[in-house]
Image (cartoon, rainbow, N blue to C red):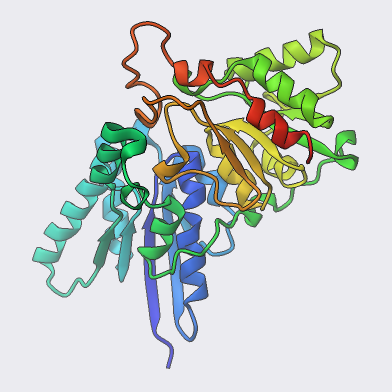
Length: 341
């Protein structure tokens, strides 16, 4: 006899975290056996394309934060009607706390409601210890890899990998560079403290001796600057800055040899397709739970005592030479690796 279950996963943002949270979907799918499981997913409106065609998502719910509290309460009432057996909060934010409180109130009014909640750990003590004691903080006490946490909360063993093949559905590009070996480069971050110098990216591109494809949006000043520098140096390249949507970026990443990037969500997208990444870390650190997960991927960073300081560099305390962790990384270790790919 089949045991029918309805599950809701919640991860509202950001790009990298939503991608890594698909390990929970993989874990649920692998554990189905004789059960019939209907898996719903709630994600922020800005990231709906990431999961809109995911093969393990039965129904995708989205929320536009511009709708505010009123919109969130309306969505909560819609979710309550679904009568989920399990809800996994993979975000643990104020919004999801409000949702849990509402479900608790509704359960008091209707004791027959049997929705069970599980909430992801924020690992605050692990982060605090790492920020405070830096590299002196023992590795076993540093944050657990997020992709492991997401899988384990639903019963996985942590070996599951992000699954993004649904993002490629219906994409068919015919750019000429796709027929030859090429690399992707993502020099931009929304956070100033996570940006590396453009000359460093240029040296890495030249060392690779492969055709570069620059990614980013028109608002990513570092991506625009790198494209302009490549043009000025008359280095053949392709600019995907502003010209590629998320699906097209995914397709281009999947076919590339590797990605050179700062710490951004696209590194997780590349690794979801088993594409190696070379990531420059500054105020962040690969041991903060979102470092590279593939064997061929590499992480780099300056050997400064003050790393890590925060998730985005906003906690940099230096009055002079701010963001020295990115400025002092000369890129030699990265260049040596990409030269022989």
